[in-house]
Image (cartoon, rainbow, N blue to C red; front, side):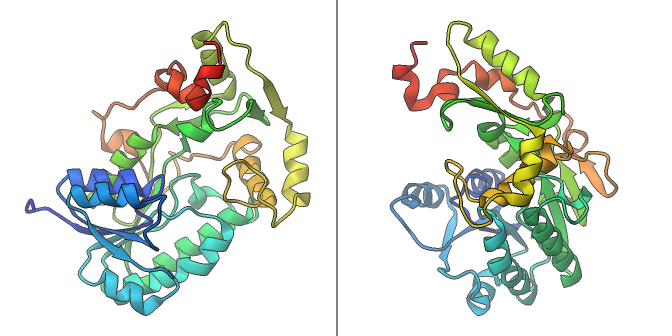
Length: 319
């Protein structure tokens, strides 16, 4: 290990963010422990790849088992939480992981953010964001140093594609600007940020690509002029209504983790209020200023990629 190597535990290390983040940290020469609940048929391949790369593995089936988490965290400098987050998960496990890290002597804690700049939101914008704000307050009160990673939207969910969806759906105000990034860029910038002394007790906003829904739909049409995409628009009025009246327990979104009302609160914050990112918020560092030479993958790079847009539908897409 290099002299400046940091020992880092990544909770949720086989997830969408956790897996590439653990890889990026390892590639940078850090001593990484990947923490997962159990080994399954779904995560086994990722666990094997992490092991092959030199990552240590630790398992804890119940993240609310504070004593077990303390034992795992012993000797680590930093804990990064990258579990797939919704209100229920945050409420059940967030405090236990924070308490365990503090008790184990961890010096820097990175809570599960990796999305909307919740530090800049007021309470009441959405139930998920309210829980995340309470988690931030608990981290700060713990006495550990912290870094808050605000990444903007992931390409997979914020750029139009048929790989995950049946049609192209737009939301609310099409002219609202939003930041969106490829998961590999999110992982690399996050890996750099959580070991950087400049980010101690700071938020980091990744702000490499800023676009509107109108712009990305136009890019899609330019890339595939002969394909007849189906479009659907969810109006501002519908988002506002769903924020108050959607089912608080039903998860109807394809591949979703959040119940419908919680998801509507997310859509309200992003596509009605335009509050996904806040690069100029106090105590927030812009990742483009921290790492000015880093080149981000652009939306047009993936919207012209058949695999990104069509995935396994490519054989039926006539493109």
